[in-house]
Length: 92
Image (cartoon, one colour):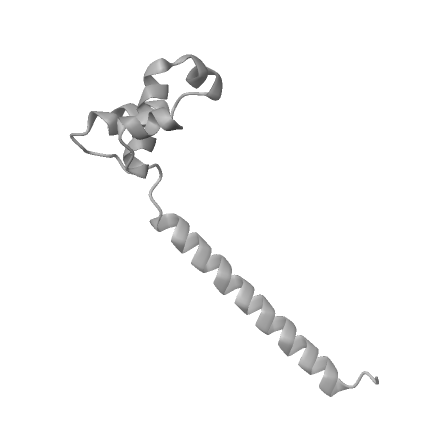
């Protein structure tokens, strides 16, 4: 393939288009990051299980192994999620 002025200009045009697309993508990303909230949304609920689970999410795995309150809360959460009754859990 012979390198002519026409092919050189096409290459430059493609490179400039790719650069412009990259700049637009970076601008969109920074705009989305500015709109994103910093932390998790505060949960306001009268459900004590939800408050307990919120606390349990902050614990390390080592702390969770010894925290019976959190273990019971997660078990109750699983029971509610799967719609199990206390009798169903005994069969597992």
